[in-house]
Structure formats: C-alpha cells, structure tokens
Length: 416
Picture (cartoon, helix red, strand yellow):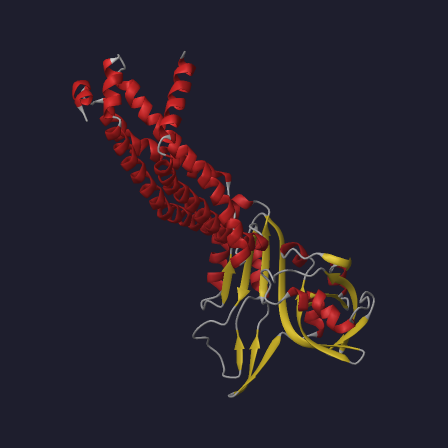
C-alpha cells in the first residue's frame, strides 16, 4: 500500500511536470549548471592539490633534510667565509637523535670531468651509501656506493643519466675510467633518469656520486667564487644531511630535537630544514580550506537554482488552486497535498542533479585537454553535489508545498 502510494505520487508528479515541459526544463537547467559547476570547480581544486602533494610525497614524508646556507651578517674575513653544517653536527645527530633508519651526509663541488678528450662540468656529490635510500635513487645498471667503498676510500663513481650520455654517448659507461682533478675513477653504476631533482641540491641526472671518504681524501671542500670584487672562498664541511626516520609518529619529536642541537652549535642561522611530513600536513589543510571556499562559491549557483524551483512551484500552486480545493473536498489531507508538491520538487532536483553530474564529469576532461591542467573528480564531490541538489530542491520546495497544503478548501474552490 505504501509503495503504491509513492508510485502514484511520482507518476502524478511526472505528468504534472510534463504538462509544462519548457518551464520544467528551464527550472532543471539552473540546477544542472549549479551541480556541474560544483563538480568542475572541486575537480580543478583537487587536481591542483594532488600535484602539489605528489611533489611533496616524492621527497618522502619520513625524511628530514638539513641544508647549509650562507647566513645574514656572517662574521669572517672578506676573502674566506666559513658556514653551514659540520661534521660535529653529524656526530651529535647520530648519537642523540633516536629511531633514525638512515642518515646520509654529503658535500658538493662543481668539477670538470674528463673522458678521452671530452670535458663536462658537473656537480660532484661526495656522500655515503644511505644517500640512495634517502633520495630514492634507482639504478639502470651496476651498483651504488657501498660500505666497502667508504672504508677503502675507493676511486669509484656513479653517474647520473644526463652526464653519462654527455661523457659516453650511447656507449656503456660501466667499468670505464674518467678523470676528475688529479684522480682517476671507475664507473660502477648508472642511475635511472628522474622527472625532478627531488630534494637534492643539484639535478641528480647531471651529478657524479663518489664516496664521502674519497672526496675528503682527494678533493677540497672549498668553493671559489670569482666576481667583480675579486675572488672569494667559501668553506662548507657538509652541504646537506639527509635523515630517514624509522617511526613516522616521532617526526615532530625528532624535528624539535634537531632544532635544539643545531641552535646550540649555530648562533648564526647558517642552515635550513625541510620536513616533507609537515609540508604534507600543511598542504592537506590548505586543500581542505580551498575545497570549502571553491565549493561555497559554486554553491551559489545551486542557490540560484533553488530560488528558481521555489518560483516555479509557487506559480504551479497558484495555477492548481482549484485542483487543490477539489482534492481537499474529496477527503485528501493536508499532508497528501504537501507530499504531492514535494515529490514534484524532488523529481525536478534529482533530474537536475543527475544531468549536472554528467556535465560535471565532462567539463574537467575538457579543461585537461584545453589548459593542460590536471583535474581529479572524486566520488565524494559527486555524492556531495547530488546531495546538495536534492537538499536544495527540498528546502526551496517546502514553502510552496506548505502553502498549498494549508490553503482553505472553500476559497480554493472559488478561485478562478
């Protein structure tokens, strides 16, 4: 009986709306564009946020990265500046910061690399085997630096994809020898090309990696800068210290401990710290706020559509005043009349919502092709848009339905 009543109400509502096809279509159109705008705007916002978060995740949320940087107001002679992270910092971190999975110090120099008459200026990264894990480097052939290389101060190098191509062309560089400064080194590994440099100071595709102990033995850690004022020498013991935590829940505690250790040793702030986990949390908070703002702006379109529904339903109530009077005179209760008009409203809002979802799924694809901008349509945005569409119809249809239900039957029969 209950299902039969609802079936009759829906059938009568469809028939009533079908009598005014143009008016009903224009009413639905307002909701179609409202829902489509909500889905599209949220898809654009989600796509932009997705790209930012992907870049942050590429750094690794369980990483903590320390960098040397020249401080403001650095004390020292005009021709020599000493600043940045030091070996003593590395030792204190290894001894005092708990639950570290790996740690990789490094310092970098730009040097000329020579191979059979070819010379390429490339960044040399003197580091440890943990560098590969912390910075997510992948090999095409060969191996990365090992503990044995560190202990023996071996003359071995690992090449990035671009510098290997510049030095050896299409030839296999493994086992080949190259010259850096006065030393000769054997290529033991070749890295896979990377889409981005990640958190390293230089492009890994153009870098040459060698053991930290070998670099300390054979190469200086002094950078010479020549400018209009003459020569200046900068001495940096470590350009970067990369850390990987064993427990992501303790990142905040470890960051606080690192700050205390570094502040004690560096009165002048000659270092910087990047914590991808914190950046990821900030990005997620920003995304949440951004989604609410964009959704609210797009929701104005749904508000306009809701006002259109109210306007049309009020006109429908006026047109059907005598019909309402007849129904009430034949025994229909107020809730019957109210329910009839609410069903018509819900039919309109559902139709507009479904068509709006279809258009909303189409628009982000067009934006991607036209603007080369990533968009992401989430199930949550579809459910939210359809739900708001139906809710808008119910809220704005309540007043016309109530007005029809509380109409005086005698006055309604006299109307017109």
